[in-house]
Structures are given as structure tokens and as C-alpha cells.
Image (cartoon, rainbow, N blue to C red):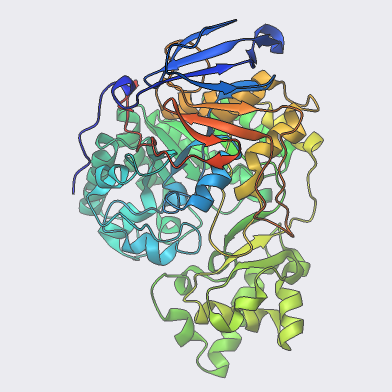
Length: 540
């Protein structure tokens, strides 16, 4: 399977004329300048006052709202679910026009998609259209099939699995050659960079030398190395940042940290030190304190967390085995700085596919264990076995951070917005439905970020770092991915108790000049595309 022929100019990909009138754009010093925006054939043709709509143009009355560049979710897990109208609506109501997938080192391509569908099914969901063809085939599944643009990274864990399976050993020379070729091909097919997930199987088995070898290919085409750091975050963040810095120094690759979730003072000071040492990094972070991931990664040693196996079921089949696994789980959770002695109260079951335990979604392990008359560890093991490890959990943190706490991190020039949003399950983390609206509600509106800073961090910086083409600005010649924001009304409605409520205050969105959200509802137009990235240019 190969990707369909793509136009080299976005003007060939969209048609029609749209005039956004009556709104404002951002001017110097964060001022709001009254301006209309004229779009023809998917490109912004004019920005100014009192523009006239050509005959037959579609007119959108912006009614004193702000016209901003479409937002880029720099860390998304919606790549397999973006065909679902509920997911589309959740993203567009936040103003998200482009998502970046292949995160945490796991994705459908390369291969036939079966590895990601097994291991990350509880995070990404199964891809309904991809059956092979590598990054080119994957990107082709998005052309004209969704209202949202999709870029992807080459997932290093999937690459390793293609070559080495679940072998925990270091890669030998021939295996490194094979992995480098898969990375090279993925980048040639249009991937925006390489992503690692160094807490997930098999990514956690990759040593720094292996990552240096793969990043040599990334640096050669000036793509981006995106890393879920090794060893977790919180108190271990500095060690993870130092490893990325070592890779940058060895290869010259540009680096980006996934979902940077660490004490703010530590993160700000560490990033400043690394930048002064010549290893400047960008990063994505979301405005929530709690995290979300697969339960097996939180609780199980790597030997029992291999996807698609019966390892855990066999290990706890008798009393002695269960006791040994229980001890390993307790050692693991009690050693984590973000969990500790109250770990069972900190972990809420988000997605549990096993029918017997389906009703436990939305409850903490402690509460669920009490309700079922069992122990939190035993309950977790049974839930994991019966769900083939495909369970996600939301984790509280001991010291939640406020918007004032997070603002110094979000003001850093390397910050990009990334939801890390997971749409699988009946009780997901609310970040999937609220991240971008919450940025505007909690940071731009109160003045913790200027609106210029918000637009840059939610759109422009990610476009520039990932090479997503002529997007990310409201200027003549830019691709018309645009959102119309009511700055006084925009707000996230999702919460931990009601995580699937849609955001408010963004009711009109264009992708490639085509209205995809109008009056808060889908138009059912599908101008989105798989974005093919190249050094210095993009096909879409």
C-alpha cells in the first residue's frame, strides 16, 4: 500500500472562498486589531479592515471574536480514533486542527499495526484503516477522510519490535542497521521525527547507544527527536533530561520532551542549564496535575508487561507465584515519588474492557477493592489478566499544581501545548476534551500568558519545531487552518468526574480554508490530510 499522490501546494488541495468578517486578529503588544480575513483555495489572501466578500463567498460573522491560527496538539493519542465524529468534535471544539501522533514510541507503522493494536489499544485504540505500507501508508489513511490534519512520528518502540520482538537485550550491529533503515524510510515517507517511550516495552530496553544510532538518522534530515523520558518524571526528571542532552551532544539532533510533568522549579532550572550547555529543547506539557497511562506500566515489572502474552496469568496461577508478583508490585509502587504509601487511593481505573470489572471504571483501586471485598493489588492483577493488560488509569499527584504554579513553565519559549489526550474508555482523563480551552481559560484570560504567547504556544511553536509547513499564523500566504475564539467565553467543561464534556467558546473552525465546525457543530467536511514533513518544506 502506498500513499496517494499529494499536491505539492495546498492551493491544489482545497477550493472556495471564505470571508471571516467582524472579528479581530492579534496586533503588536497583544492588542486586538479589528480585521477581516479573506481565504481562497485554502490560503489566506488578505487580512485587513472592511474586506469585501467576492460573489459566492461563504461569510462567517465573527462577532467581535478573535481569529487565531489553528491549534496543534503536539502530543496526541487520537491518530487511530480521529475518524470518529465524537473525537473530531472534542478536538475541534478546543480549536485543534492538527494532531501529532506516533507518540511514546508506539504506533501502527511500520508493520501491519498489530503490535500497537495489542499493546497500546487502551491508549490509542485500534486503527480502522491501516493494514500496512509503513509511514506512507499510514499518512495516506488521513487524506480526505477526516476534518483534522494528522502528522506522525516514527515510533521507536514499534521499530524495535519489528526487528527484535520483545528481546530485552541490547541490539547487535545487524539489528541496529535494520532499525536505522526503518527510521530512515519513515522519515523519507514524511514522518516529522522519531518518538521514544522509555518506560514502555520494548522501548525501555533500548540503551543510550541505540538511541544515539537512531537519532543519527533523525539529525541527518533535521527532524525532531521526541522522547517520553526514561524512568518516569517527577523526582527522576533530571536524569531523563540528562540522557536526552547526551543524545543531542552525540548527534546534533533537535530534541523535544514529551509531557514534561515534573516539579516546575526543577524543570525550569534544568532546561535553562541544558540550554546554556548547548542542548536547547522544546517540550509539551498540559495544564493538569494528574497523569494517565496503562496500568501495566505503573504496576508490573517489564518481564510481565509484555503485550499479547499470557505471562502475567501464568505468573499468578498459584499461590507462591501470586505472592511473588504482589511483592514486586508493592516494591514498584512504593518506590515511586508520585505514588507512595497511598498509591491505591491515587490510581483511578479509567478504561477496563473486561466485562466483569467494567463497572469499576471511574473508581480508585482502593475504593474498587473495598467495594469488591478484595485487596487493591489482587484486584489490579485480576483486572489486568481479564483485560489482557489493556487497562488505563488516571493518577493523582501528592501536590497538585495551580495555574500560577505552572505559568513559569508554560512561558518558556520551548513550550508547546500537548494534551496527551486518550479517548479510549468511558472515564478518560479530562485533558482529552479540555486541554486547549483550559489554556485559554486559565492562562490567557487572566493574563498569566498574553494572547500572543498563547497563540504561539498552542500553534506556532509546534508548527516550527515539527516542520508542519505554512501554518501557525494569521498572515497572507499561510494555509488557512483557523479558529474563531470567544475570549470571554472559551472554557473547558470536562472534569475528573465528568471527563467527556465538550469545551465551549470555539464554535467556528476552518481546515485548509474549509469550514469544519460551524456554530459549534461538525459540517462533515473532511479536508484534513496526512501531513508529509520534509526538511524545510511540507507537501500539505
